[in-house]
Image (cartoon, rainbow, N blue to C red; front, top):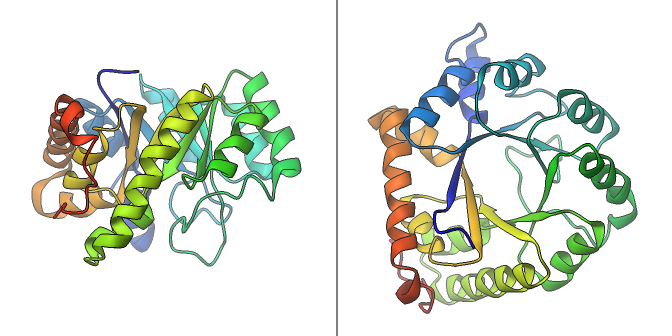
Length: 261
């Protein structure tokens, strides 16, 4: 297990701001470079079917200009598979995608879509791309991901974060237990465990105490906070929170984490 949790910064919403007005500002590639300088380990970018934020040219530039791993978030479509195989990002995280959603709303149903996912995962893995599946921390989904041959999963943390934000302590405790047990189960199957969605400084610090988790991918919260503090400062502050959580691992992993503010 990694002693330091990797921090991936999702730059989608920098591109959202650019596209709201058109033109080239703010530049998501510039944001990626700033995030790396401030302590990020890799960059995540989701190329959607409708290109609502990240564009094809952004992916080309990210690969050409960054000296770090790119995590290419994608739906399991023929178009996205072809783009991934052509551009060869370091990693690809397969996520569910619906045109009408504002952001990815839930985990991928690997059980229901196993047959459709199998050739996509197989092609990406054969091309040397590190594949993860964005799923809920449910045993049957984790087991199905393992059978697909994906080397990693990314646990959807949105339900836990939402329950904490809304003050639903019992629900938060249940979700936290699922995350911890799911991470343990996945690690036992030989899967690398990542996590993301809805995380802030406090929840990122808490989840870094789960020893099986080796990577967090965070975007919207940090881009929002950057309006007030600057992107470099928010990334550096997140890196500090994550390191603090990892250092406190033995004590924090035993908690229910239902008191995070």
